[in-house]
Image (cartoon, rainbow, N blue to C red; front, side, top):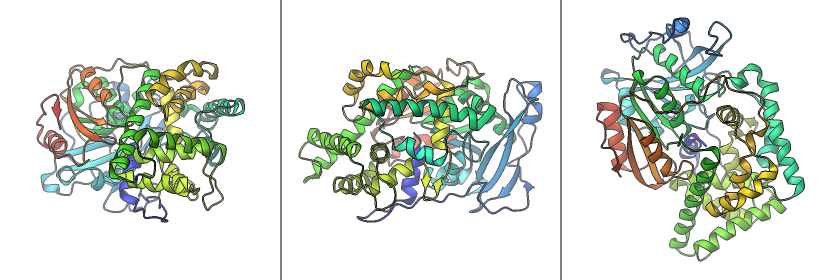
Length: 517
């Protein structure tokens, strides 16, 4: 799950009782006004910046980006990369790039490449929102450069389902409890995998994290930077760590915020994420109880039980929303999960649950739509498909429906409210029909410069332990710990985290390993 949705909430939502959620409009290379193309080099390429790691990649590393104005002072371009790095003379694909120039060009340091996570979220949107994502000390001196990783956004993108099919898939019961629902779940597992292959062709086999990290190095060269400066959130930490492992000699200043643990199994990853969301939900309900007159009940246990019962009730009888769409249980689950990404959005979850308990599913449906980038006329990007294609190509681990029941006790212990959803989700990659041409790596980034890893103690999506483990796994990892709620730690209201991160990015001051904020 991506931080981008949390950014969208921050930018867009101004909820009062009875109001509507309006989708954010973010200018990208595809929907922006165009200008006469012009080559606008960020700087004269630094010495050795365009040296290719292999002679057969020289043409990609020597390319110059041609920038177009794309509104709000931003510049957009396209980067050309090989579809298959094992065959660079073969088919190529295009990667969408957006740059927000430094606000203080006289003090400009260089380019800060960013990724919001997902996997599947467009990095161009993330960069376009740089003023909300980063504080002014960073945006003053860095060009913030976002790219849509291969298979996503305005880059050559994977397609797996029609919009109508995706609506059905999202709304489906995420923890089936009848034979009919299990059969339907199995149908979507097969349909998703087959759809990616049928609708995306060769691209479906070439959207791995390793290939996206190779694209990042081509982008670094095209920006004229001899070293990579990077900020990755959520899945973006996996992408950044993979880059560091592939190109340790090109690592400059890397920040990995809301880290993914690359050392544990897919099952353990799902189990720990279930526990993370349970921790976040308990913190939300505890706050409600502590405030007094909590609409969920007089105790945390009572509040959690009411939320679980509400989901069960929606499964039995979907709610009206004031439109031609009903709130199905899948939408209700995503609508509850999204506001857990930031403590600032707990009031939004209050409204969503209060109206839902009163029989109105409109706010929860709008939150679910925001989670999946669904607008009034359909999906605004392919992030809900790309996350499947990328994750399952990286790791095709899957269990069958017959194997799920044996896993349920562990998952229900980790999360009495959401555990069954995460247990069933381990079936998801069972339908994938392609294999990656890249071999899995034991990521260590040996020889890289210091890499800053940030973890938040009650992060729902990327549990704190993951940051501890990733910092330990990377040979040059340096851990910053934020005591707090919500997903990711930078620019979340903690001066200690913000100042340490900015001192590192701007001045190269490496924080003390284990800094506690």
